[in-house]
Length: 411
Image 1: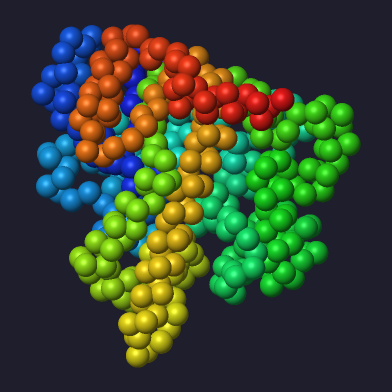
Image 2: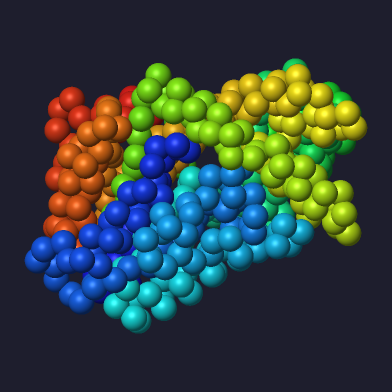
């Protein structure tokens, strides 16, 4: 790894404008953004959205259109058949190959997407806590790491997006949760009936927070060191090994401002033909030879919320309307989970790294995008490419608040 192999990443919760910013950065680079060392005269956008890799589903996954791409090359995007699951290990392999090709062609790779654990696994060879054991003690290495890497992507997605509560979970989700627990901790899975969702979910949360089986997590509590240091703090203890010098742009919007935007986006999807798209998706899933490979699509936001509507042959409009309301709720919850991951997982990893830098862009007013978001992003990008990392956040800066929140939680 050298300074001649930089990487740009754009992350953030759904609806914050990640695709917009990545394309605008690429356009500016193509046009020339001022004095930049090296020969980066073009760029390539690499998709890091686990659902946008699949063909179709343009509305449900909110894909950018060809006209919105503005001639910028997009890769790992809209290329996989729906019945051929795409797992994280495949994506990391493909993404690193795309990055190498970009560097060889003097293209600046820009990774963009909301599947943040994919981005984190790409940035850090040893740093994704849900896929690699992050407790710096080989004697106590957890088998969970290996089990997670071997999971199909549908179960990986479920693991990283567990429902907040066990009550209200339908039977399909309940069975999938128990299946996930059986893969990760078969001993504990045998203790609970698959319909006992509350206990199954509690076990999965213990595994996710501790990166251990339930029994190992309980035994670790007997260790006085473990009692003093919360498990999520242990995730940040190792030195994170970055694959590339990188700058990460984190687009953030307060939920009070973001949620109405998300609701309006779904209303627009309905206007553009969401009903037809979920009908087509149902036909694909129903005709698939291996439905087990399509678990992730079954759980995709924008499909599972319409199960009652799709199961009723009369297709009642009232059920569709209820599905729209549920889709809005699920999308808001998903956005909150994305922020939680960024704050509790990616931010500690970047803080423990020496050459991966993060810039938080707080979107207070979408109408001020040019001055508040694009202009500072271009300045930070130019400085990064010239070897100047972003400055430390000032007092009152939201990123500084998040870092302080992270440090306080470690005490």
